[in-house]
Amino acid sequence: MARRRKKQTSLDTSPHNPSGREMLVKWFLWLIIGTVIAFLVFIVLVLVGWIIEQALATSLSWEWSVNPLFPLILMVIAFLGTFIGNLILTGTLNLIYTTKYYDMAKMFSITLLINVLVFIFFIPIYLLFVGTIEPLMLILSFHVIMAVFMCYCGIEITTNPNYAASSLVWSVWGLSVAVFIFALAFKLINVNWGQQVNILLALPPVLAYLCIPFFQTVWEKVYYKFYSMWNNFLYIPSLHEVMVDAEDTSDINVDL
Image 1: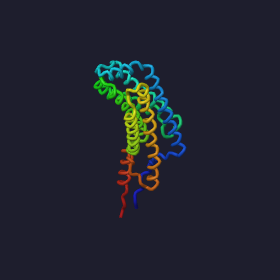
Image 2: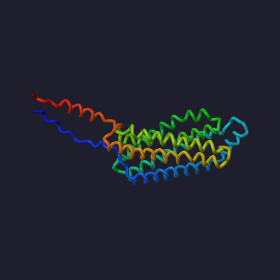
Image 3: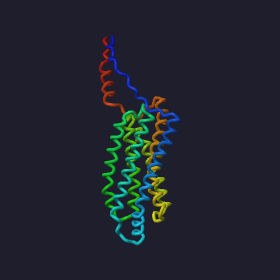
Image 4: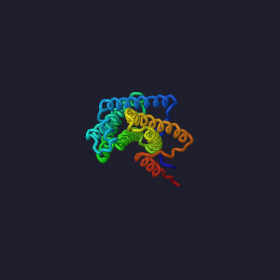
């Protein structure tokens, strides 16, 4: 007679299946958040517009000296913009989708830590190009996009680590689309055309908060279709699940 298998608590390992309404609401939320952050960035840029104009004038006159406050202001803009945006993001997710995004403290902590680490990483890059205007604007833009990307991935991965690989796959696609659209805009807009600089610098938060979560949410819907067909190829079992499976296998003992 076979020994009775130890009774284990069943675990819900199914991936998140967003409804069409949830996807639409999230899309509008990301668009609103990105627009709000872009507006804040635009306001700051208007307040410090004289420094930007001075930097542009210096660049056009072929001088190599740029106001030393300019890189510092760009760093502060990128940090505060992404921090406020991610704070709004975590609060909104926790308020509306409490079932999935249930731990506000953990999400806030991970976004704060990632923002600080990304900020520290970009400091030497800002200082390296302190004497040039166009590279500094590019660095600011990639700083914002990368901070949003890493914070959003951090939220998704810590919320459901079993599907960390799945969350990362199409977040990277969203990152790629955001970078491509920004690169196209940077190619079309001349940074020496006055107010168009403000538009160019306000574009990264809109692209980041719109493209990255949108593609990741669409992928969740697509991946659930694979799961429904018994194909959970990106599922990462936890150590507890692996140990439970191994214990269940070892408990099967057939007496002849």
